[in-house]
Image 1 (cartoon, rainbow, N blue to C red):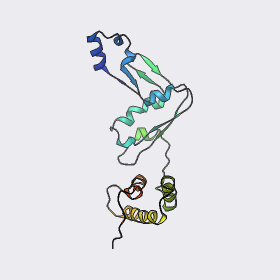
Image 2: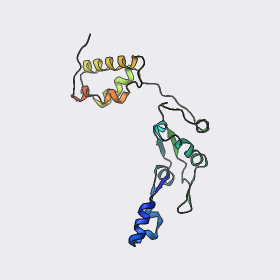
Image 3: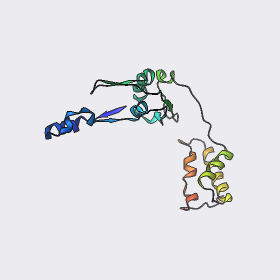
Image 4: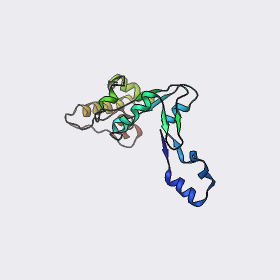
Length: 174
């Protein structure tokens, strides 16, 4: 929502800086505040919420539910001009609180198959030879099948791999 820099405010007050007279100088607006303040409907993406502090989802419950939050330092209540669409993404790396999940609509996105992955690669590397892409995708999908992997390689790891950028090459292995 926002961050309040009390240390900066204290320093300004000790140095007699004129900024100390306006507490707003020490408040940095966060993405939720920005989404509330925009003059048209927007989409706010909260990505990888499961990697945040365990209390983060619960901390958002009231603000998202009421579509407002209170700025204690100024006494201001911030409400959206236009209700934002809030999209929250996570990778199932840890459980989210039940109270939080009850307020969400879910949409599971399947991992791309070979045809979709080919289209994704073509968007990023249209000049790469198709036999190189085919070899890289074979290895990629074979690695994803390995049992017991803690984390399977993602589409990003294939797209950003050194093969397509010329940093390393694929060698056939038996």
